[in-house]
Figure (cartoon, rainbow, N blue to C red):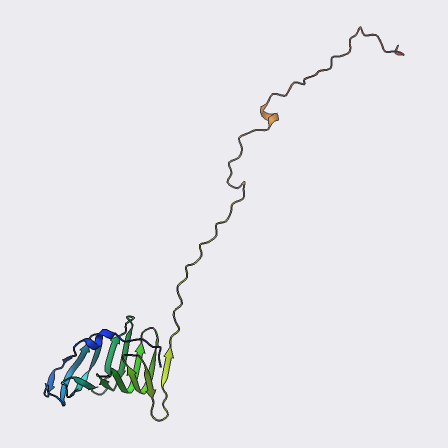
Length: 207
């Protein structure tokens, strides 16, 4: 079973539109109408196509079932959008759609794909278009093959590159001040010792 996804709930309240190259039958209770040639059945976002369709009308003059087949080498197709906006598609040799319960049975080379969730392959796949519940069968030695996609991880913003600090003196403007000895007049000593006077009395013991 693929991950649940509710089908477009408004589809069930929409009219069923049928198109074909040729039609043969009665729009009367408990009858079967045959459509041939480029068959297209739509109901809201639900769409089914093929080469031939048997349309079953119940006692209330409602379409209860549509069986769609195709010419050799082709596949019957069904698709629908769920409430999250994701597309479901199904392809097979034969499509039997229960319009009352919203269940599609795909037989022969059946494939069901759910956008963003996964897909399933088998000889027979039964898919509930209302709940996305599905069962699968394969004949003989065949197997039902299912692929589940991982839930996408939220995108994370890349951290901004750290700014490299420049050395303190790398971009600093050299000081215009010059050493004091280069720009200033040498200071005059505040006290200058005067030379001894020639008239001074010689020190005691001096000739």
